[in-house]
Image 1 (cartoon, one colour):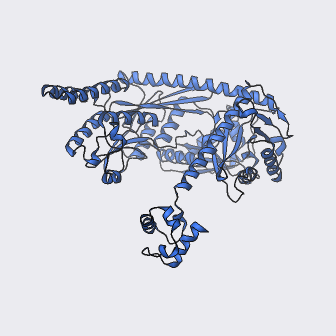
Image 2: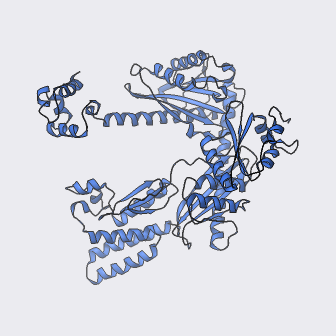
Image 3: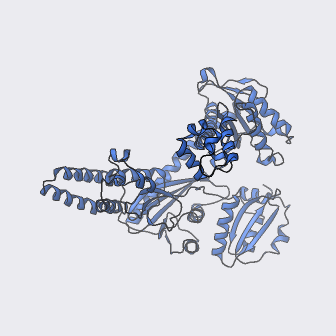
Length: 609
């Protein structure tokens, strides 16, 4: 493959220094397509313009370069940190970005006379209390909290509920709380519950079981058989939970990271150990966009991951890293504490690493199998829809409302690897006749593609409309009105109409000529279309329900100017709720302190206008 030489690389390289720094490669649309760092900028950038030895992917990158911008840094560590920030902020086309937008959850135990047990997301702050974690997934933290509630019966209610309750809640009735809100337990007894829960969360289950056995024997010797039976049940539960908990012999906090690379796909498997207890694992899948290897992927993952999450004292990796000292130094700057990164381990560390490597291999095999099935569906889609090539990007739209209330539209995006969830979008639909699905579809398509009509490279290859000929006609009309160059050749549009009795498998797929395409019920292409349509529907209806719930939670009084929180509460207390306020006249409303005739009239009009 020939390398295009539009960019004057010789003139550019003559101006570049040999210092460490970061470079940004920019295409003709002024979009950053690649960010890299180098210990020696001149040497690194010159390597992209060699006459031989470049891979097809590197040549593709170089052919898209219109300009290169460089930033010199004092040290290579600064360059690594800056590169990481730029990749996360710019998401360049040729860089790998490990998406992990959600913060990991912690268990938080408040500092209170009767401490509260809750889930906390984000970085642990200075609030009074103790954090346990982080946990790699919501499932692992739910499992732990569920068992802590069952065994130690700690409260999870708000402090305001604790202070104002007059009778115990359902948690007390089902033995998930000892009822401190209504005096069913005292501070000393609750403190013992807290101490036991803390031992469990700190991985001291064996000590806790020994302690409970002694307590059970004490109750038995004192003939308190009912209390002894309660402690016995707690011991049995502790033993069952501890069997499922992977307790190690490690001290301190350790992360074990394994990488498996196959067919340009990679799996990073992260295992988290805190206080000698494994809190679970999390896989990260990605596809290589340039030539890469497992050590490079691990280095990229470590920088991106630990710039969002606190690093443990020790990180064990599956491959020997070239820049291991540089990574450790950079993590030290990020976390303000020493981090040891190691590859050569023995004994229990080696066994734990081997387990992580095996998990990475198995997870990647499963992922590739699902990717293979997805590839077959895309190929079948080409055959049935008579496309020139498998679409790289599919966008599907759906409208959701209840009798015209809180109308929301969704756009979900699928690529060759499946759903691209970070590019999903919801749209609030306003200024239309309630229930007019055609107007709603017109509005969302105009808003979506008006910003892209001058950038054809941002357009999808295939658009799916959840609806029949009417909605499809609106979509074709909107797209044709935008004068997008070669739109008919580059962008296909199809409608998905409900079939007989609205049953899955009987959908009508309608093309641009308003003709129905018949798919076999077991067609891989039809399964793909159903999957994408169902995801668009789920995403739309979730947004609609959230908007509807928010609207219904909002009091009509909040929309009246001059009515703040105190006046609103006073009105509700005086008239016994919104129905009483609605039945009141202007004179009655004026009897409330702070409400004059003008405000009273505004309140009256809001209910009777």
